[in-house]
Length: 122
Image (cartoon, rainbow, N blue to C red; front, side, top):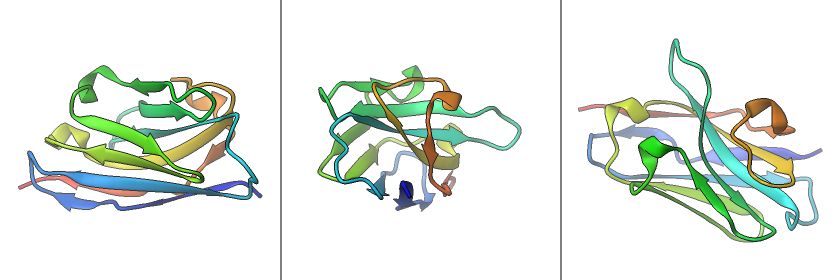
């Protein structure tokens, strides 16, 4: 069974940094998959934050995190490096995976992790 597992959430002060990691189990290879992150704040809809394609390395970032977040991958793990964090980055962060390229539409992702909480507060 394919299962993304997140780690690295927590409490961070504004302007601080945090790294989230997602390891995908249950697949021999991620060569044709896209792995990304969605987040959801209380009372708000899920938002696509970032994604990376294993096939060609293409990356996607939502406008509010461009220049602050980076995404990288190795064989079975994707890392989201979050810098200069803001209170509006607070939310539950979910790792997602799908066969094919990155998409900003949540329903197009077949596999979801349980989520990890990120709180940006002084």
